[in-house]
Amino acid sequence: MENVSERIQLQSIQSLKSTILKLENALAQMTKKGANTTLIEKRLKALRIGLSMLENVWNHKPHPYTRGDVIEARSVLTGLMPSIDNSLAKAKEGSPQRTLLIRRIQALELAVQAMDDLMKEEHQ
Image (cartoon, rainbow, N blue to C red):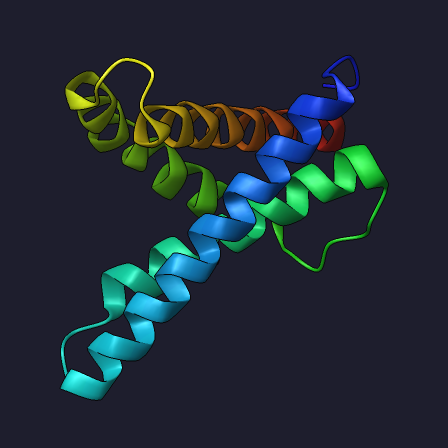
């Protein structure tokens, strides 16, 4: 994880922050409409944990999450991958949307890797 370039680190952190902001906005809209927000809340928590894991590894920021939180977040994040992959397959080559999706996938993969690394460290 440490051998990830600074550029990729910044792009990944920014991608997760952007995704979190979009979900926060969606959550606010759904709450206003009285819609069920359980799924968005679960995804939002998972993304925040993923961001925290990357900041922990790369910027040495402590995180407040339990092992159980991390395991659940990992499951949620890996569950997001197929739908993002499908969107990527439909995105036009060279489009800004395609670039955004590629960065989002990369950020999620790195967050999951950081979670896996943390779990391995705890087992040693």
